[in-house]
Amino acid sequence: MKKRPHSTPHDSLFKRFLRDSETARDFLDIHLPPALRQLCDLSTLHLESGSFVEDNLRASYSDILYSLHTSKGEGYIYVVIEHQSTPDSHMAFRLLRYALAAMQQHLDRGHKALPLVIPMLFYHGSISPYPFSLCWLDEFPPDSPAKQLYLGAFPLVDVTDIPDNAILQHRRIALLELVQKHIRQRDLSHILQQLVEVVLMGYTDHQQFKTLFTYMSLHGN
Image (cartoon, rainbow, N blue to C red; front, side):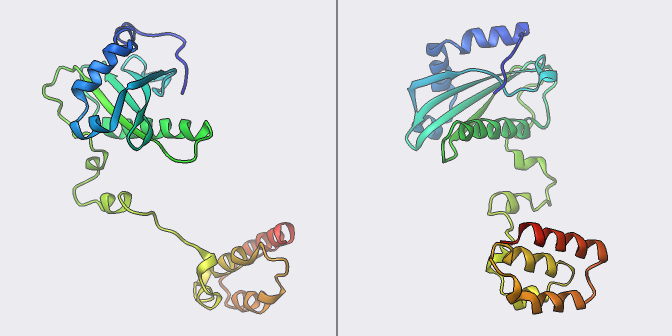
């Protein structure tokens, strides 16, 4: 989390109130959705230093991060206030990015599990009510498969679990997959026949073969 060398009047006012622990507890007690409020022990609220807002956006946004105990373990509440009169249509995605940055900071401190980070937006713009969804997945087109993708497990290519005979059917990517699957083995001679078979298929050009041969000579166990 970056430290701020200077602050704007908007930022100073926001921080003056929400850096006070009792004020912050009142704010969160009132405005956290009930299901999230039940998870949070606000008596353990602790102000964290720094900011995730980019330097060139400090005139438009202020942020503040609290750590606290939740019923599910250590967590954070991250509050952003938008100072500009015209709201950002991509604010949901911005909040997600900042929440992920807070998670990364938590991991960088030596923790093993991802923490719960609750992002909140404080809005006082000229358009009322707030005109945009704060679900970042709603920023995709209506027919986008984004929800299916991002609410599930990401695609995995685990070559360690693919039989060699199946890899041989993978055309132009077969040689790379076969070598990567076996590169940590002490002796690659047992796959020599398969390597020759793939090369003879004619899918690999000279530069690819040269690069792969150099890689095998340097990194093969």
